[in-house]
Length: 236
Image 1 (cartoon, rainbow, N blue to C red):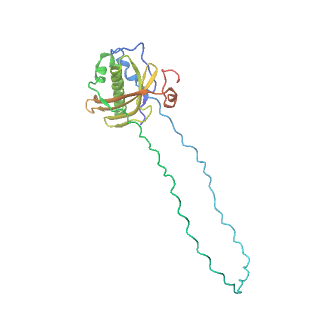
Image 2: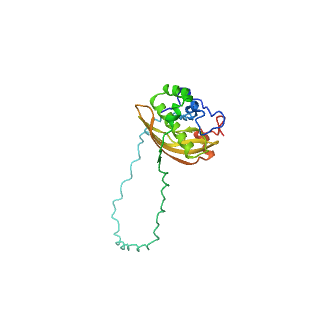
Image 3: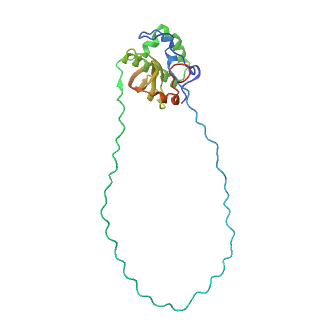
């Protein structure tokens, strides 16, 4: 599902240094960085039609008459001795493949912050923008906003300024439930992995539960492949 809809196609950054206060709440939703999905083109059909033509029937020369003279009786062949039992070889034990380490368990948020951001008077434009979005787009924006606020308070001084919910893997949206397993957030020109599970109340349109896990920094050599940039200029 394409989430980067209409007015959210452009990426907008924070204006001025960030702080823990709601200094730019009206721009909060525009900071949810939604990269354009990569387009996979179907390669042209290079198959060639091949017609199988049967070979022409050829007349085979007549076989010579069989030799009907009696053949001398041959002595019976000596019995073949059974092969010697092979010496048992070394038993090869397949290497034990260690399972990949399990990802960190999600931690449930004790307090939700996206509602407070949106009710701030400075969020008037953000509230108006949300009303223009479809249900899935709106829910993803809300959960992305909640993710940024949780990171901001979990890691003081990180000042996250952008989030890409489906940077490394597609998100899953089913009604008000959103599962992000391959998200990324930007902090001080670096990108970090994030996973989160978010529930949006269909009636009130507010986030009602949120759980998340912050991962390691994403190597820079993966940024271009996943449309991640250090700022809102050209990709590094």
